[in-house]
Image (cartoon, rainbow, N blue to C red; front, side, top):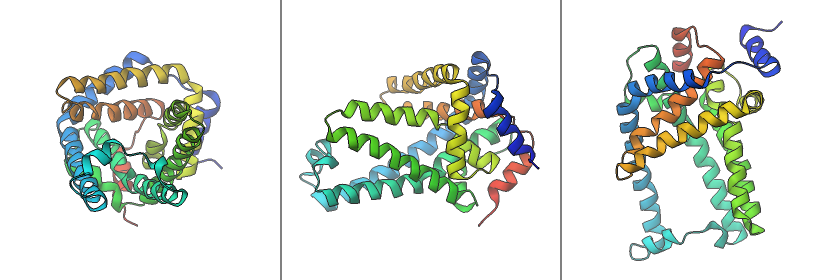
Length: 262
């Protein structure tokens, strides 16, 4: 017998669902206004930490004098076959380990939508939940697929095609994370379901994604720093889209699931 979650997912993937473009954008803006400052500070912390981490690695690997020149000309395709494999293995693991941060922004959007208190620390909550494994698996699988496209087409001198295919993958799997954290899907199932959902409304979802991307890019006007505070809109858009397809009714139950430790 199907449970309610399975039933609603099967209904949406088989029969389709309705999305109103204007309503999604309007609700996404309302949600974004609640998380813009906190989410922007969260992104700022992540960017600083990333620069510190990769900067330290670059100094150790290349030395201070040659670091900037090496980084600007960096191309993993210049490595040996073993070096390329090691590089991509590291990046795949990195993608898996950072996946819970993205999930944390979804939780922030959800708490804002339900008028619950939240802080910057929310973005790290999913490192201590039962969802960590599936988030890691999903992100790692998607990283493998993307790297395969990028690397494969790089070898045959068509890097643009590889990059375009990676964007296509990102588009069709954009609902993967909320399926994991809000409806307890496995990483593999979440990817599959996300593809089926996007295929039901590809044009309106593409339009929403383009508009949301443009809104995020408006932050570049603020000497690039502003993009840190417009980027949370992307998560508000994805959260609102998911919530429009599968209304998240029992907020307290979902938050409780999100706090369960392994």
